[in-house]
Figure 1 (cartoon, rainbow, N blue to C red):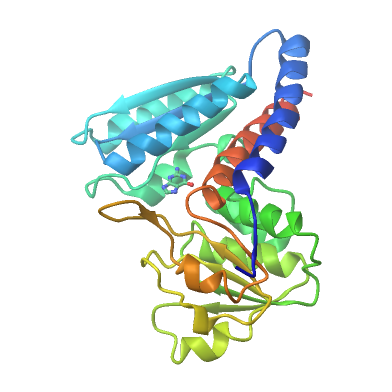
Figure 2 (figure 1 turned 120 degrees about the horizontal axis):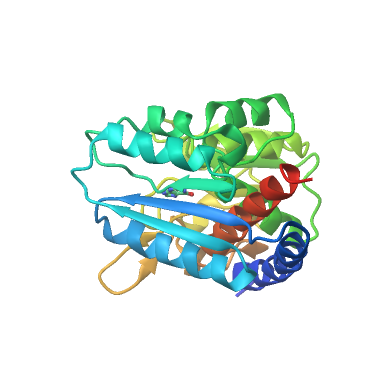
Length: 283
Ligand code: GUN
């Protein structure tokens, strides 16, 4: 194998230990723990696992989590009322609504209901807009985690050609903006892109967030590239990324594994946003 493995678990562990120190300092200064509310509507199996992992991570760094498990038939107004209550609660520093929401609920209006300063996912239009403008904001957790993983290689981002596959509001779009902010030359490819291989072959940094198991094969990768795999596709036997790891690892310079790459970083960045917003609003 040629590629160095980017160990997301190890990078996340280091970040979490720094956050623990900040969370303890907050508790000592403010006389309460930093608070994160996590809302899950319905019983999506993957969402339940993500929420469980987020709550366990809060515990580890000393953030007080409050989990709200609502049935899938919950009316939008009930969810709105809960968010309003949490918005007004001074001991709730961050609010997270796990996506996807059931189809009868308008996810956009729910996300916009969360106060921007409590929007630790960075999904509110204010945070997304400030990211676009290069203003201070709570950035979306997964792309922020990807940037930290790229930084952990020690390879400078400035001037590199970064290709993002995927254009979702959660990953692809904010990822492209963060790479641009780091002075990369950015190309966004997606499901309608023609001859995608000719584009990915040019990528010094390739971030893959298409949600298709092993979409990127070894022949699509530039030798020595940094490959960040955001995919989490449940197969019969195990979790698969959006990148065919065995092939890619023969060509790339650095690669993230699935699991143990981007996933732990998403949670570390969520905790980071929660600590940051708590500190900012209790200065
Ligand atoms: N669903 C998939 N990824 C995410 C995420 O980062 N945050 C939330 N709230 N829901 C998600």
